[in-house]
Each structure stands twice: as C-alpha cells, then as structure tokens.
Length: 506
Image (cartoon, rainbow, N blue to C red; front, top):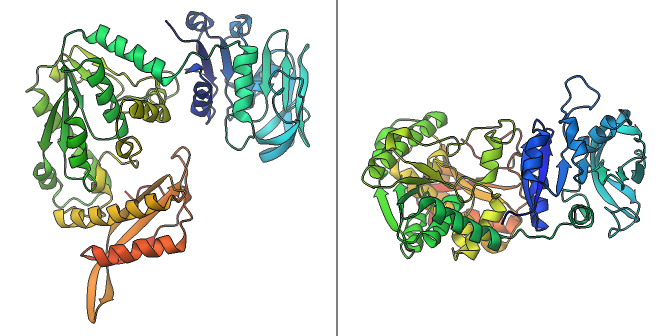
C-alpha cells in the first residue's frame, strides 16, 4: 500500500531537504517537487498535506516564483514557511511589503497557544528569522498567531481552509520546538497516521526489487561508501545469490578499508569480485599534479576497469546507490544544482535492460538507519565522508606509493584519536602537503613532509566551521604522527572555514 505523503513545493529555499527530512522524522513520507508542478499531478499524488518552502525572492517582484492557482482549491491542508507564508498571503488578498530593516537570526517570538500549530509549545520561545519582507495585512479570514518585536505577523492561520503560515523556519535546530510545530501540522491538521518507517520502507523495497528483477542477475559497483554498501546489503537480502558486486581497489582507500569491505561482504549472499587495479591507476597518474586532472583520470580509469569486469558478468540489471538528494540536485524534481554520475540513465555499451535503485527515495540519515537494520557494522554505516578519488586528492602534488602510505598512517591516527575523544566534528582527516620542512629528531636534522589536519563542523557540507578540537587532543595527534609515521616531522591544523576554503584541499 502507498504511504501517506506530504509534498514539499520548492520555491528556491535552501532548507527544502531539511523540511522533507523533518516530516519523515515525524513518521510521514515526504517528496520535494518544483513550484511548477501542476494541480493535476498533485491530485494524482493525493498528498495529505502540502508545504511551501522559503525562497530568496520577494513575492511582489516581477517573475517571482509561484505555483498553479488551483493548488489552493485542492482542499489539502497547506503550510507556508517564510516565503511560503508570504506567497499564501499575497495570493489570497493580503499585503506583503519590505520591512525597511531585515530580521535575521534567532529571535524571541510570542506564540498563540490556541493555534493548531502551537498548542503544545511554550508561549514564548526562540525562532530563526531570515526575511526582509513582512505581511502588512492578512487575507480575509486569517488571524495572526505569533509575533516578534519587529514582526507583528510571525505566523498566521485560517482554520476553516486549513491554511497555515510561519514567517520563521521550524525545520532548523535554531528554532525551539520546531519539529513539534511540524508534527502538529501533520497530525492535528492533516490527520496523519504516521505510517512511514525504515522497517516499512525496507519491506516495500524488497518486494519491489523482487517484482522488478525476478530471477535475473544484478550487477553493482561497490565502492565501500555508505550508499553502495547499504544498497548491496539490501539487494543481497531481497535477491540472495542473484547479485554480483564489483569492488575496484584503485589504491586510494584509507587504512584497512579494502580488507574490511572484503570481510563484511564476503559473508553476504552475493558474489564479490575484488579487482586490484592499483598499478593501473598509479601508472596513469604518474607526473600528474593538477587536482582536476587527477579526478578526470581516476573517473575515466574507474569506468574502464568496471566495464572490463562487467563484460565478464552476465547481468541483466545495473544497481546503483542513488539517494534522494542526488535526484533532487540533478533536477529530476527540482532545479539542477549539480549533476550526479548515478542519475540519468544506463551505460549503453554494457547492454543492461534496466536499473535498480532501492535507496532512491532516502536521505543520507535514513540510509544509515537502514544500514544498521540490515546488520552492517557501524564502522561502515558511519564511515567518515570520503571523496570518490579517495586519498589521491589528499596527497598534494604528484601521487606515489610512498606518499599514499605516509598519508594512510597519519590519517588512521587522526581518525582514531578524534573518534575516541568524541569531540564535536562532522568530518576529519589529514592531508599530505607537498611541502617539506626542517626538523630535529634525536640529535639529527630531518627534512620531511608536513601533514595538515582538517576537522570541521557542518550540517549540510555546503558551508563549514572549524571544529574547536581541544589542545591536548591536537598535541596528542601531532605527537603520534611525528613519532609513528616515518617521513613526517611537522603537523599543522587547518583553521579556515568554508567559504573561503573548501572542506577538501583539492
């Protein structure tokens, strides 16, 4: 049976995926669709609720984002957030105008406890505001249900029409009780049953895979990352004995990762093909120092190796670890942000009859939950984010086996110590710089590499702040690397946020 669904209509807001995730956390399935979606298509989806996202535009500006007017006539409960609330008020006869002075940041709001959205919340709480326009007058039948010092209409509602709006962002952590506000909309207004869970998703996908694949064979490129690993675990459960996984060891994995992949997936009901292609990649990268050229060479060589191995397998379907953000960012349901290699079709030369993407509807946090339920070890499910080219772009300059060995050892020490300390860092790793420096070890002079340590805090990886690792931890990491890793005599800590830097060095 189809899950109850809430549709998130995207007006260009940066938090659209976060809204969708919050809805799912409340036990209701959600999908993101562009503001150009037709009322007929919405009616076919039959959502129990619709949420309008925020956006950077002013609703009264020429060519401001809008949606089909018939959306308001579907009789489906509606919640507008930030721009979404302003769009509702503007469309239904209210007035939206510039504030004169923008309202940004976490502010104190007074909430009407009689509102359907706020009945379970304190009368006063912190909310995140991010707007330069304000609702000066409400449409007929609407009442204001929240205010801040400078914004008299920080929320509004029309109970008869089941249309609600909040000027602040309930989906972000800065808004206290924000998830509770979304939950109130889902259960008190939309009448949700809460029929969405990872257990439910898993059973539906197992049935869907079995129906699509039948008794045919499936091929999956297993990188060892979270997405492909969970995809492999799910497929091995759904179609035991019909899955072949190709793991290409390009030589740029972290310490012991290749061994762990072989250990974990060698026990599953699948055929694991491990390809030692380290020499092939190193030969093609000899003398290459430009990071973009490295990426292109590695991507091209990986495709060649995979194709060579795929031709040896008689598989009818290609499986991919595509997840929902890949689909959204590639423009399937929204404006194109960036293209993803695993969204957009099949490699024609390999002759597959179809593609299987059992994780296509999931966010990354849901993929991790699913991985744990499928029995994958936490070391794989919560593995530190890792770029496709691996350590090749964490070795600055030309890549050699010696440099990779140095970096592997240094990186293992840093990850071990930071993980053990439970410091607040979302991603952490080391970089082997292309700089050597003078040092002193024992009574002798050394001239060896400097290693850079990088640790950041981020919720979306679009921006990041430097993780404030304690000095005793930094000193311990530095001491261990300098003493245990041959070829390193200096460790530096990268304290640059993004922007202006990126999280990776290359």
